[in-house]
Image (cartoon, rainbow, N blue to C red; front, side, top):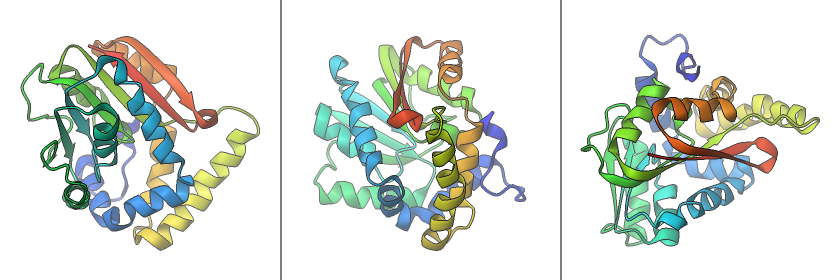
Length: 243
């Protein structure tokens, strides 16, 4: 399971602290590297994922692992909710997110807060929807984090998870793995100033129980009507589940 993979394997800190430190270090380069390394496709993935929530028109939304608030901002554009709370364990990422939100004059709708996905500071049955984009594989305890999300969702509320997955189509699988394992970490090393960050990205994706395996994890937590939608030949997947 992904819990065993940590950014800095020889460090004694737990995964949670290491992930927070890693994202604090790469925060100034994070948005730029996402666009560069994915050739801009990551923005398309986010838009598609959020669009799938439109049918239920959620008004109160929690964005877990919000990072620099890209998902929260796009959610306002598409869904026009009353309130979005973005939560993350990296203060530096949140600082950048707050500047983006203020620049776009979305302060009255989006609120960012420092917090832990496995101990959410919210009452039961608070949110109409919870979103997590590229964050669940960073949970120290995957099932505990998902159970917390289930707890704070209202009855019939919806979870949307956007996460990297492992392509299985030959020869795309081999080509992509080569890029993901060797080229991407090399670029990330020289541009993000953290030699481990993008190597950890590859390792955490390999360890993550994607596809049907993750569907089964969500169902074991109590989510219903769970669906998995594969994107870009399996590079990424969207998961939807109801409480």
